[in-house]
Image (cartoon, rainbow, N blue to C red):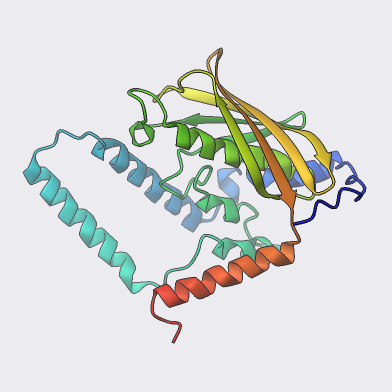
Length: 250
């Protein structure tokens, strides 16, 4: 992948353009959400509670067997419906009546409808991205602390949100994390991320993670702009792979 170092820098975004970009991953008013979206979030919240309670549970074996049976029956209810992908909302978002936040609902880090997401709540303030999150027991590494791999993944998402404000976002090229002190579980932590500079196709970003006044980690990320026709190719490949996995590719 060439650098295109001689390519002129992108034109700075207007306040309106930056607002449109950042609104895609910020929390929309409930009044603008469909019933389906509200209920998918409620379902994901319930699953997060189950995950939190399951980690390290002291429930007796008999109770675990009963709950496992209950959840197995719930899982089977979804088998009768076709399985989509996390990008199914992308086309809808392009329509005038679609939800512009749909794509990010399934994000593994900020997706309110994804039970694997903490989630991280993002906001753009004065050209920087600020996020807050609460990591539960499922994210534990060292006793009482967030696993470093989860910290890195969260930074990838937050720095990715920051680089999107360039107006011509790219994909992660490199990600460097410096762990300064343990990141506590069950405590609200704060992310800050911003664009440091741009060089050709590369967008250099930086970020920090704090718990209260304590610096927990710092990050540097380099994102490389791509032609979004390539993004469409990746999605098409994903859909073919999913058909083959489900036995529908014959």
